[in-house]
Image (cartoon, rainbow, N blue to C red):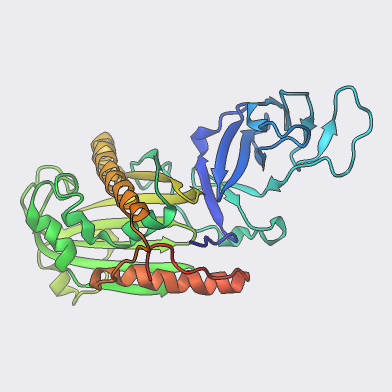
Length: 357
C-alpha cells in the first residue's frame, strides 16, 4: 500500500512529550526522535547519529538541542551537528534530517513529505481531547497490522453489529443491526469522505444518555475520514420521529437529547504495524460520565484490534489474497478514489492494493 507523504501524521498526544525526554518513533518506516525543548517547542529529527548510526533517542536534551550519548555529538533543531567533542572541524554534511512539526488540537503532527512542501493549511480541523465542548479521554493502541486495514475498518461502521455487539451495541441486536440497515450517504471531500446515517426508532443503548435505556430514539451520526488517516465522528440522539420530520436531513446539533464525539488518527509505523490514537466521550454537559465512555470506547477499540490483527494473520497466510467488495464498502472505495487522486497530484506512483484487487 502506498501512503501519502504530503500530509500531517499524528506523532502523539501533546501530553506524551514532557520537556527533556527524547521519544523514539517509527513513521512510514523512518526512525524518528522527538523531544520538547526547554522553551516548549517539539523538535523531530532522524533517529540516527551521523557518526556510528546510534539512536539519538537514547541521547540527552540540552535546551533546544540533542546530544548523542555514544560519543557526544550535539545536534541542533535543524539537524546540523554543532559540536563534536575532541574535534574542532565540523563538515557541512554532518547533519540528520529534521521534520516539520506542528502542535495543535492537543496533538503533535509531523510532516513526512519534503520540508519545503509542508503546508499548515493541510492539517485537518481536528478536535483534541482538551476541547471544551467535549469530555474526552485520550489513548493509544499499537497494532500488529497495516494502517490500511484500520482505515477500512473506520470507513465501514456496519461492523458495529458484530464486532461491537457487546460494547457499543450493548448486547442488543436491534441496535447493532440499525448500523447495517440504515441508509448510508457517502460524499467525497477534497481530502477525504463524509459518511452520514439516520438510524430510526432504535432503543437507547450504553452509548446514550443515562436513565434512558431502551427508550426509542432516532440516532444521527456523521463522520469525516480524512487523509492521512483522521477520523472525526459526532453522534446525536433525538426523539423518535425526528428523522421523518426532517425528511432525512441533517439535524441541528443544539436540538439533540445527547451527543458523543470521537477523534481518531491512524499513523503507519512500518509495512506491518501502525499506531492508533483516539479520544471518545460525551458532550461537556455530561462530563461526569467521561470515565464511563472512556472505558466503553477502550473496550470497543480493543475489539477492533483483536479482529484486525487476526484478519492480517489470515491475509499473510493466504497466497495472492483478494477481497470481494460488497455494498458496505462504498465509503472504503470512495476514499480510495480520493487517495489515488492525491497520490497522482503528489507525483507518487500508484501501487496495486496489497490485499484487494
